[in-house]
Amino acid sequence: MDSAPTVAVHVLVFPWPRQGLINPMLHLATALLDAGVHVTFLHTEHNLCRIARAPPPRLRLLSIPDGLPDDHPRHYMELMESMCTTGSAAYRALLLSSLLPAHDVPPVTCVVADGTMPFATDIAEELGIPALAFCTFSACSSLAFMSMPKVFELGENPFPADDPVCGVLGMEGILRRRDLPRGPGLCSTEQSGGGDPMILKIGEGVAHSCKARALIINTAASMERPALAHIASRTRDVFAVGPLHASSRSAASASLWREDDGCMAWLDGHGDRSVVYLSLGSIAVISYEQLTKFLSGLAATGYAFLLVLRPGMV
Image 1 (cartoon, rainbow, N blue to C red):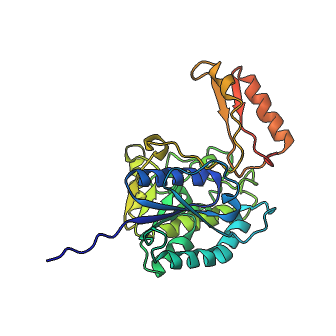
Image 2 (cartoon, helix red, strand yellow):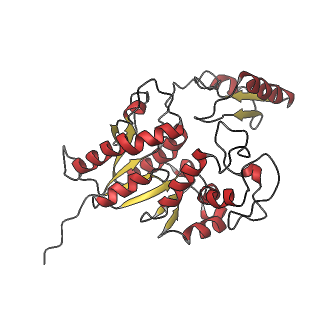
């Protein structure tokens, strides 16, 4: 009896279009490439044209529009709304075209999409493509985001205080209100009534990701076993695959800003563990007053420090 023909595995990896979320998914894509899997990495058009460094060998890059003008600041809520309309329509069309082989590229057989984009896994499943959700942050963070509606219901809004939080199962007695996720534009959500819309929206997406065929989390089971157990009770399956940056055999980078390596010689002149590193990520915006306070605090430590500034952060 003739055996059935082998179908080539082709994974489409679709990150949320922010630097800190693109990086771990690029590490995942690189790991899949190292395992001999065909991988397509899906950017937004706005981000793809900003990437200066060449992608890892054999990684295929595609893009879809996010629906916003080039000069738009792309704040989270506006970007999410546009991605759910214009972006999702373009994504559906791309997946439909990817079901057929083209130019020596096999059809897409699986989608791995960021867990904050529910439409990405839903559309893939509607088209018959198995879809997995990927949480780029820790299991504890994922669990906290899933629990934010309950947290707000109990009045345990994020606030700079050490009051214990009871609304996140498995983290009672550990989590404080100051530890809860907060939007970049708010000092606290005490004044926001029912809660920060951005945090609730992310929590809604992460909770929906539990409906995917499996949830992949960039963590190690040995580090976050209790949180993973609580997440597993809500999902069909969960895999702890991290930390991916430590296990990737080849370096992968997709910086959306020009990388300044002028500090490397300065760093080489300092001993191990002698420099304080500070980065506020790809979303936060601070005032000159806040920057001055940061610098004063860093200088007061007496340690050399390296502060990352991106265009438009201050």
